Each structure stands twice: as C-alpha cells, then as structure tokens.
Image (cartoon, rainbow, N blue to C red; front, side, top):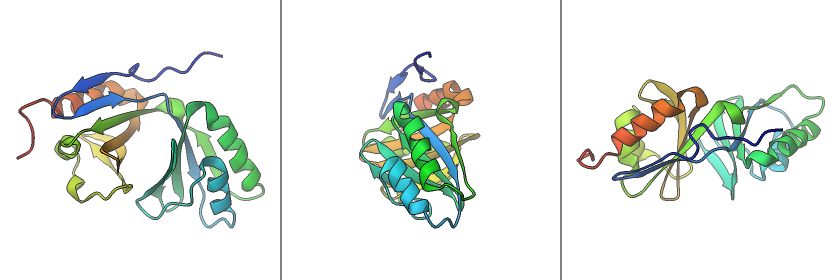
Length: 182
C-alpha cells in the first residue's frame, strides 16, 4: 500500500494571512437521519456529539461537522479512517445509513492570522465576520464549492482535491500584502 500524499504536498503562502495546505486528512461523509444510535455512532467514531445545524464539534484532532439535515462530515487523522468506519458500522448495524471514506477526494487548507477572515471574505458570499467559532458554512470560494469553519486563530477550508491548485491560487492571491479589506 502506498503512503498518502496530500493534494499540494503542503503548499504554503505567507501574505497578510498565512495559507497552508494541511493534508492528508481523514474524512468520512456520513449520511443518516433520525437514527436512534446516531449520537452513539458519532461518539464512537470521532468522540464528539452530533453537531447542531451549521456547526462543527471538535475533539482534539477529530471533528464532526453538520453539512445538511442528513449529512455529517467526520474529520480525523488519515490513519484512523478504517477504525472510524468500523465503529460506525457497529453502532449503526441494521439501520439505514451511508458512510464513505472521502479522504483522498478532498483538499484541506488553513487560513491563519489576524486578517484570515479578510481572505475568505474576498472569495465567499458568506458573511465571514458573523461566523462564530465552530460554526461551519457550506458555500463557495470564488466559483468552487467549499466548506469552512472558524477555529482558533483562523479558518479551515475543505474543497474537492481536483481544484486544490486553483483554490490555493485564489487564497494566495487574496492574501497578497496590500490587498487587505478596509
């Protein structure tokens, strides 16, 4: 088995905000709604509770984000995806759900620094200044579908791996010194 490789091999850009690609990151899309053991399953897989609408619950290097009324994004170390899928299968046995490893289909970026929100504000129609800590938003970055959340001193952004280079270019351009929002 080959070692996982991130989409951009850890690309970075330092402008008025710091942009870095942080893959490979483990991700599981979980489609389920109204299941009696959903809380137990998510707790077993990533150690968090089921997130409220448009929120992400974080537990160290693991998280569960609300993506839609019947969809959750589990984020965890890449090497732990198989164990998380097994935990979901055990906890949800006999119930209707779908859990898929999407780790290799996604790219993950961190936008950090005091002006990190300015970078996303240039690229998304979402009101970034109103984004509360651990609030997750599905929107777009320019014309690319993306999900992002505010955490600690910056934002995490997830997009499709196939557009990782384009998104890195967008983020880098938006973080160029002299282009800060006023």
